[in-house]
Length: 232
Image (cartoon, rainbow, N blue to C red):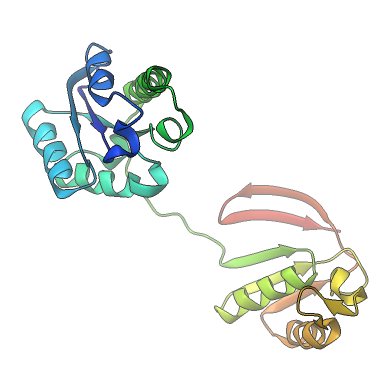
């Protein structure tokens, strides 16, 4: 059984104005594995992070749930906080009670109940988690762009400029796509060919770009960094 700490953030009034944060902390204190709960105005602040680090050490926590904003915003922050206190960073779960709760509800009671459910879900997941160790895996430093329109051409040029080999697969006889059929572009009404033609030439002459016209993707297998693609 894990020893879990739950930390509920007010996020100023962003969360606390709609969600009863103290009720959330109280409601989950008897959930399986939970040994500590607390709420604080700004968990991402130094004061909030200090509270988390202290609780990890004082209670010997093996995992934490932070009820706050989107993990996109502060998951890395709380993982660093956990690491600083000696906790595996992958034993941190974020319950998003801001974007997925307080910001989309007006009824305080309903928002609070939903926040409790989201927190319980994160706790249940954390009880099944195992500490992970980051590792490295060899990757093929090469990219495939499917479609040789203006977007595909520009993407390939950018990748090639960064120093990587790139393949463009286009089912038509030539690259250029729909833009090659236009006279002007919206909204500036610039000459389409004046923009597109130099890029087509650059792509064709770039030694890091391989063009496969009259071609289609037959199959894709493998995984990120090591895909195997069959072209016909």
